[in-house]
Length: 450
Image (tube, rainbow, N blue to C red; front, side, top):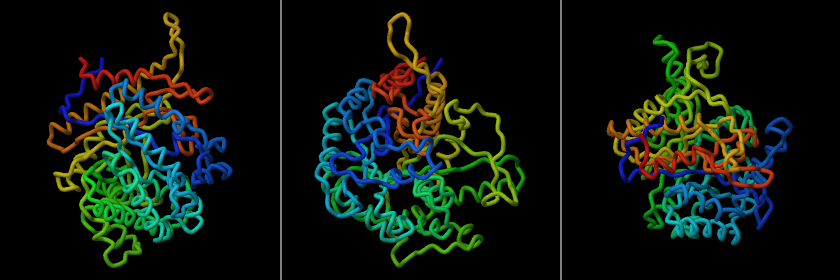
């Protein structure tokens, strides 16, 4: 039994994807390579060296996908722009075919009565820019701001909501320190510089946007982490403080306070490449904060672990597809913390939330229909929507929720082995098959539930 979440009438319910994960058409209509194309070629970096060259083929099937979204009742679709599709080779020459695709995508959304939420950067940096140093170089922030300027000019009349950057934490610590995401670099100095340059890129994009006079709301999306401590001991709590500073506050404090946290600057001695005026750019007012949430960490102090924070076993059920703990209660703690950071009045959106499950395609013996009975995902979504309802009752200015993801897609280093979609994608035929979770969300949006 899944209860209907009590949410305001103007609460947004949408769904989301990212360009590299769904579009495909990797070498069509002028698109050039990105860092994930390159990373997939590194031995052992990605499952079976799989890449996003075909993915869910949304580049050719966007009308079918939007029609399905509309039939399910979604009013917002969050997508991202492929940087090397719009500006091939990381240059400044605009590719008309790239712009045409995104204009057509937005027009189709509007034709179906939906809104377009556009993320400017969701990880697919052109290969040539990484060859010049990527996010370790200050110039990259200005190059992304140029892409944003092009998008504001070419798509400004079509986009209803803008997101500057998706998940700065993953871009930086996973890409430049741990090396487990593209571009696969393990270098502390490059990591520290990348943090500041991603923050700066956001500020530069905001500066460009305010010049345009466009009225659609614009914000940034972070996958913030506010772990809970394994015990009540001061050292375990300090481990959580360290983790939160590294994974969240190096992005939120520049955004909301114009400074970096003391833990990294004073205790760790990190020196960020801050130039005059940078912090004012980064801390410009935004229209909303986007939060991506999947799970909550439980940590204890360790003298040998990275930043003294070590994960411990926990009691919660884990998702069957990717083995992440299911912790909807952690979402409320995170929302309360983020709302305090943002001053208590800034609109907040859950811009990603979902689960990878062990989805099995079956044929209904009575009807012959193909179905996926993803009960665990339905429970996951229902429990997190219930937390959204509780957050609204507490007075947190939570304005919307985007389910991740609309369709099964390229799950980064996992390739195509992990399925987050509420729609099943048969990668051999590209057939789209709504899962039971899609029909559950349809009922939620239609106002049904016990």
